Length: 353
Image 1: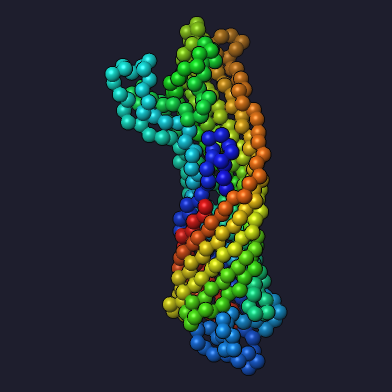
Image 2: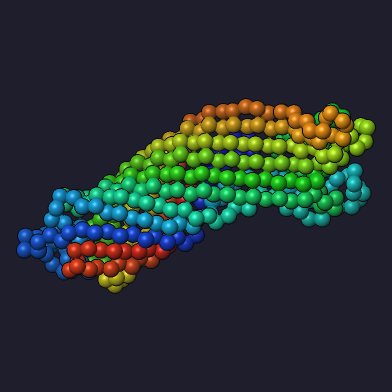
């Protein structure tokens, strides 16, 4: 996904995904071997008359079901999510000839969160083709909080931020006492694939596929900057605290053509190393909302809590977004019932951009 049109939330979002556990089960019926013409060149019984035999079990019915269930543990990371930076001299509080201590850029602490994938497929007897659909769900989150110090300095990364002294009307840097942010994402994706799983050599299987991807994603970004005893506070101490609130909402729906390749290198009958890759040209419809406001608490009777909106706008964007997926891991396969059924499980690392 991309947030390049949202103010200060631009650039490509990508997901750094740690090892995830995939628990998958498949069940098929073995065809009658006397009608198939078979050989045992590979680990499972394959038809000998095909140059690229389909991966067994092979069915004697027209179609059979495949079900999958995956547990995922993903970490979502977005670039250009900085909300404040430290290491800036405040000449009002630090002598001019003294430098501030070394600071750093502040951004949300993106966290690993659990999610899941569920899938349902149909395997066809016709040349080993299959159709498969998978739904992915994840709720990403990230929070951060930092306190300003006079020897380090803390400033907002937003153009307006708390740079404006609304009491005195002066456009001057304002020292921030505290900055905090919260980011939340609701991630929903459906993939639809048409593919064929076959042996290209004795120990290597490939499954090229093509189909569609659709997603609907919602993001919320909240930032608050607190200034105690702001400049221009006349008469003094009439304002206890000034808070500048920054709110960014984004909703996106997209659909696009997806294609890729699944591969497994079988180094024993039960164990294999898998690697998958896919790419999508995703047409995306973005709905962006921006809302900023000043909130300040006053010591003056009758004006204890006041709020003033400074930005209240939105934008709609349509664009083509590239999506790249890659995964690598270990696979265990268990054949039973005379190779008529297969259960397999995976554990691996996955990345998406």
